[in-house]
Amino acid sequence: MSKFEIDFFELLFLAEVCKPPRPIARAMFFQDLCDNHYHTMSANERLQMFEFIGKDLNLEYEDARYFIARFNPENQYIAICFINKNKENIPCFFYEGKYHISKNQSINEEYIKYVTKNKMIDGSSLKYNCSKNKQHCVMRDNYSCIKCKFAVLPM
Image (spheres, rainbow, N blue to C red):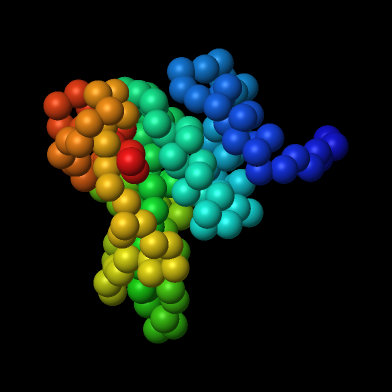
């Protein structure tokens, strides 16, 4: 299969038309966006993607919740693990109660010594608004609004 090169803004608009709920082919692209293309983007591009695509995601859909968990700069961590007595720093994100490196791969908790925020990704200055009501609201652990369960996103 041929590979095609597109720039970030083309990728951004492609992601826009593939947001959940969509047919399976588009859903597969959306997962690929989170698991593969995420790693080729700069921190600024990831933040732009998070702000642009996440602004009206409905968290009733698993793919939407996964996107928010993967791209939210406040949800990026480094898991300090000891595997066979070797220390490893593993970049990860928190999703469904575990520290993940991709949608289907989480870090075995037995190996995690401790977890720290990923200081390479600074989202500390972000203020959050509910994506549905466009006003400040209270976040839950999964970055959704307590009142309406829609995504809570940077202002």
